[in-house]
Image (cartoon, rainbow, N blue to C red; front, side, top):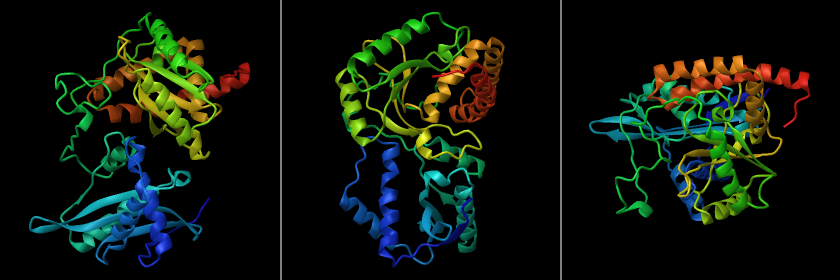
Length: 360
C-alpha cells in the first residue's frame, strides 16, 4: 500500500503546475462530451493556478513521496462583507481512489478555512457527478443554489417538450410490475443498435432488472454493448454511427466499484448514453463496456444468478421497493444504497459461477 504525503503545491515549479493544469482541464470532459481541451486552455489554467496566493489553499498528495496522485484548490474570495472559500478543483488519481484522500483533502481545506476565518466553503458540482455530490453531503455540505443550463441547440425550441435525458428533480423514482413486453422492447433496440454499429461491437445484451423475469423495475430497458476496447478514437466512431441513426452521443462514466476491489480503474470505465430514439416508444439506458473487464462481467453474472435464484430476485425487489418508499425523490440516495445490496448478491453469484462453471 502506498504511503501518502500531503504538502502545499510548488507554485514556482512549472512542471508540477503544468501537470496539475493538464489533468484539471480534463475533468469537465468527463461530464460534458462537447468539452474539448486545447493548448491555450492548458496555458490559461497554468496562469490561474500560479496566481494562487499564500492565503489560498493549494495542496497536493504524493504517493511514496514521488508522484502527485491528488490535488485540491480552494481560493479565498470576497462574499459581500465577508470572505468565503471557493472550491475550484479536487482530483484523485483513479488508482488511488477509495482510500480516503478526497475526504482528507477536504478536511485540510476546512481547517485552513477555519484558520482564515472564512464564512463558508462553496463549490459547483456537475449533476452527473454522483460520487462528489454524495461525498459533499456526507461531509455536511448542503444545496443552496441550482445552476441550470440550456444549450444553444435548444434555443427557441418547444419548451414543453420533455427531455428524458436530463435530471429532473420533480421526477419520482417509480417501480412497475414486470412487463412481458420488456424482452420485445430489448429486441427492438438491439436490432437497431446492431444495424448502425455493424463491426463495432462483440455482443449486445439485455441487462438490469427488466432482463429478469418476474422482477419489478423502473420502466426503462438496460442494454450492454460489449466491445473490444474503448478510447477516444473508438468513441468518435461510435458516436458517428449512433447519431447518424438518431441516437444520442455517448459520454464517459465510471461504474460503481465494489468495496475491497483494488483492480485498475480501467475495469470500471464505460461509455453511457440515453437510449431515446424517435422510432422507439420506450426509454433505455445504453452502457458500452470492454469485453472481459469487471464492469462488463458484473451485470451479466448478476442477471444470470438472479434468473437462476428467484428467491434472491424477490429479496432484491424488496430492497428496491423499500428504497423507493424512503427515497423516491432522491436518485442519488437510491443508487448509493442499492449498489451495496447488489454487491452482497454478487458475493454469492461469484460462488455460484465457480460451482456451475458459468461463463459470459
